[in-house]
Image (cartoon, rainbow over all chains, first blue to last red; front, top):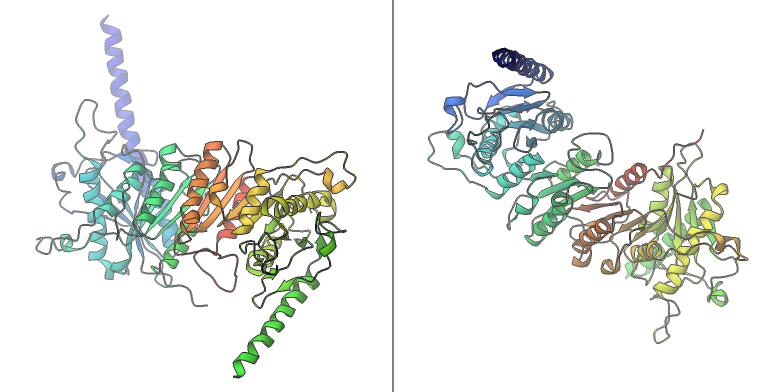
Length: 301
Length: 295
């Protein structure tokens, strides 16, 4: 009876080592594909996560988890096309991991190629899939993911001149679970603490606009008067809380008197990102919306 | 008072220009050569064209034909129903301009001049001779049938003939989609043998949105409006979207921020809603109504 147990153990060990090697290879591949500069939100570690800041992240394919050291990856437009608009991009992944490539880097690249600075947020996850089973999740959406999103907006404002950004035009956009983070950030417009020791924390965390792309927890979107203008997009074949919840969120924005735009595409479900298909036009619509909301100056006629 | 004299002169010049343009460049086809049912006696009456180009006193319903080039033709055809509260037709920005855009993008556009239930030219105190559900609907149905009957001539795929309406025209388009009349196989008029069901419907800030009640087999719907339109549209249209979804009908909705009623298509005046024709073309493409042009 001993032999099979040992064999199993050996297989398990071999497998574990193989996976660890895999993660690191995947991490390097993802990094190599996206060599843009990365800045930590808090150089000495995020509040409450200082002790774990050096833990390696888990990278499977293009998805990242075990996030304890939140960062921004920076995609700046060419100087001659820069509009001064900046967008924090929040990838989805069910708060279990982050779909960094297709709902992060790819989006930011598109934005940068259209004159908009894209900052991909790697935020702490409320249901991190790297947290061992039976161990409590250390983070929540409303505390840690929100803190990361707010800090991201402040950080961009603090370095606006360096990055060629107009501090009044720093918005946020998110996909799926990242859309939830986006909406939560827009609903918690913390003006900043003028006496904070860290000058970044003295800045306003209110996003100038919000882009909610197939956002999770759409039923929790409760805009108030004065909320940031909202751009909503999803697929009509998405699950009901989104394909029916987003139009309801649109109505709430309208009721609150907040400028709102909505595009719901036929024949497409969740997670389209920049994929070719029925919803492929949404990034153009988003940019046009930024022009029409006067975040981007209209081109001379 | 030189301005008082100048305005009518300019208006006449504009009206003449608009008329000349529509008539010269694009064929106009009567829906019924011998007059529409119930309107035969008045079919030769001159229409009234207002200074702003709006048309009323319509007794001879027609289609103005905008065909794409053979090389770009996708086979799709769209009946375009302008708005104007059933009092007149806003036929430039909600008709001819749209026909032109569609034709330039490979889609045949047919601008429908339908009979008006509250025609502005009807003398006060005289009963209005037409109704929406009777005459405007009959004109829309006939338009679809007419296009199908001449599909070969116009290089149109008879399975890709839809209807697009603005405001009051959106109400007419929605009615045509809700009341699909099958062809009458024994009809003497071959046009009447064609099916009147539109293959798709596009409702742009449609009037009477509360009356849009799709059924399971309704044509796929494209919806668009401005977020600043009146509540029955800016709030009513998302409710319409939900009803289409509930009925299991493919549906798409675009609501543009900072835009109100009547944007139509005005290439000379870009606004927050300028991209709706592109959204519409994408919708047709991904619903597979556009076939590759045949070389």
